[in-house]
Image 1 (cartoon, rainbow, N blue to C red):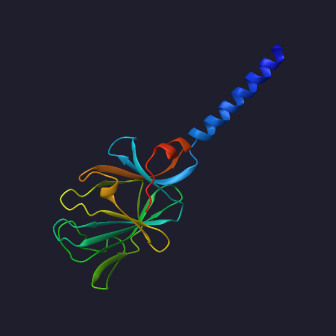
Image 2 (tube, rainbow, N blue to C red):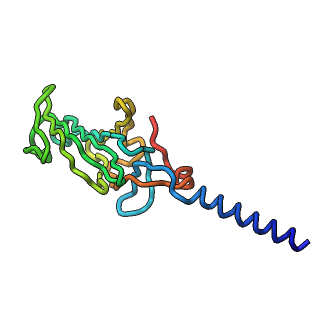
Length: 175
């Protein structure tokens, strides 16, 4: 009888360990939006190495769109590849930023930037809350930041691995 209880205990303990591993060991890579200066996940977008995404915002003075194009790198870093804007001015680069400055389609493009970041600190627009996140092979998916974040909210964007528990309790960004 005691042997039966020991077997059940061992099997129960093994199941508990396996379930803990399944729930709490990071398994999925995502673009994670953390509340500023915390580990609190505000939202996340599942991504893979090589995926690209764009952050588009409306410049608060010029009131024109600025497009920043990023790529997810293998080291869980983020590379800025390109920035597109309509006019020079406050807050806009006035040189090639280490890339190639091109004027096409009535816009200024700085291509081949190769700026690598471990994370991006960002503030959702407060005066002109028109920040958008775009992703997909053909940039076919778009969501407005105001659907997920308060105007003026500050957050840190990182590429991180999430556990099943974080995945289930978090806010998955979707179209």
